[in-house]
Image (cartoon, rainbow, N blue to C red):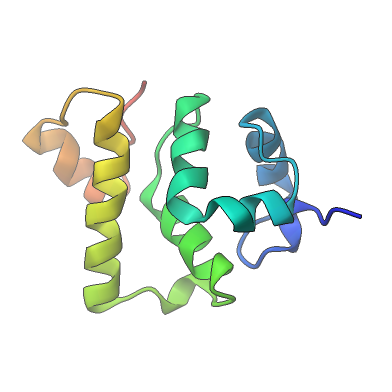
Amino acid sequence: MASPVSTIRNIGPASEELYARAGIPDAETLRALGADAAYAQLLANGTRPHFIGYYALVMGLQGRPWTDCQGDEKAKLRKRFDALKAVGGQPMSDLERHLNKIGVIARPK
């Protein structure tokens, strides 16, 4: 029997619908895809990018609380996140990049 996506640490029941709409129906599928492929699938299906959501997913798949993400690890994840966002769209302006970095906005698709 498949486990709900929300059984993965840092992912709540409200996110299950987003994952299901993106073709990720259960925790096993999410684990098999890995964080980057799963997040890219979410973005491709209309989920707005959000850095905390991305690194919470990465930490959750490692069995770690999202608050563990700090320092160099967080900076490296930010680069991966920015690359995932850039694949399907135009590069962000400097203002958008700075506002998104502090969590004020997410660029609409």
